Structure formats: C-alpha cells, structure tokens
Image (cartoon, one colour):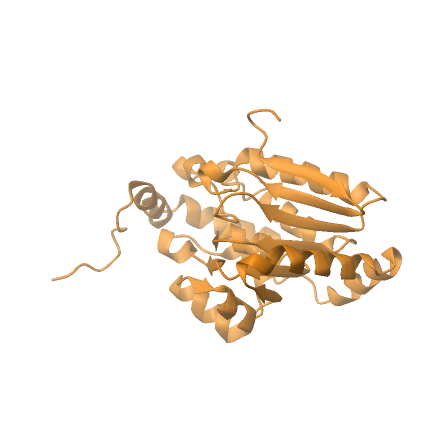
Length: 256
C-alpha cells in the first residue's frame, strides 16, 4: 500500500468493503479520499461479482467531513463541493445495496456519507453532528440525502443546533437503521450483508429504484451554489479558522 492510499478495498463472497483508512486526519474527505472513493465505487459497481457494498472505517472516527485544512481561501474546488455530490449520488442511485458501518464519530459530510447508504449500522460509541452552522457554513449538499431519511422535526433541530447526538438518538430520528453495542457491530454487519446478498440482483436494483422514486431532496446545482457561497463567506472563513485554532468563533457569545 502506497503512502497516499487512504482507502482500502477488499472483496469476499460477493461483498465489497471500502474502508476509509486515514485516521491521522479523522478520515476526512480530503482530495485523496474523494478521488479514491469515487474510483472504488465505480469499480465495485461495475463488477458483476459484487452483490453488496460495505462502507467501513479504520480508527476511532468514521468520517469528520470535509478536510478543512484544504479549505483555505474559500475555493470551491478545494472544498470538494464539485465532486462530493457525485459520490453521494453514486451511492444513492447504486443498483447494489450499500451498507455503512459507523463505529465512532461522524460529522457534517461524514453524516451525509452514511445517510446516502441504504442501511446504516452503528455501534454504541458512534456519535453524529451536523456541525456546519457552528463553522459558519450550511449543511446544504448533505441535506439532499439526509432529509429524505430523517424525521423532519428531528433533522430541523439538530441541523440548527449542531449538537452531537448518540447512536440511539440517530436511530430514533431515522438516520441509523441498526443500533448495537460496539462488540456486536461486526456480527450485525455480517447479518445485514448476508440478508442483502440473498436478494436477486435485478430484483434488488428495481426495488431500490422504486424506493428512491421520491428522488434526492433539492437540486444539487442549487445546493452546490449555496454551499460554495457560505464556504467563501466571511462567516465561513472565520469558522474554519476558529476550528483550526481551537478557539470560539467571533459570533459565539462571551460571558459578561
């Protein structure tokens, strides 16, 4: 494995596992991660021997969202807003079932990555947060896959507050499908993958098409414009700088 490999791919008995493997930056959606994920998804979806796709991770964190170290200056391409929607849409429209395994924190774009999948299995150590507003940006792109999944009033509150919530709350809100203790995650994933692989490929593809008939929520073109505008805004750049400096952003009220 080369030093710049941040995604591992393995296939066994019809199940292709794509493992986010960049724990040093909390499996952030860096340029390398986005590129390798796009390529791997295209490859496994084109492989007739693959029946089910599993999205897993190494390290404590599932995915921390966009790599903010690459977002300096507010350049849209650096933020990945021009390619991340393609990843989400590929997963969303995949004719093969895609299963996400969340063993630890998922934030912002990482939540969107899980939400795009057909089945989400989470361990008790998993936590989630729509942290965008606390960084001066908007959860625009991920809303396309999150909102069709979640209970509306739950998504409303959590997107506005940016609060972290645990796996049980995520399950109650519709984001997580199977919530188990940490030591039961592997067994739960194996059971779900086996259940999915038991379906006939063409029937699964057509059933998923029916289930996705309502479509993504909103137009990616409009959501991209909104996301890029706030990344480049004064608030967005201040929020990103504050995050890097580990300090409160200027808009956070201080004690008198």
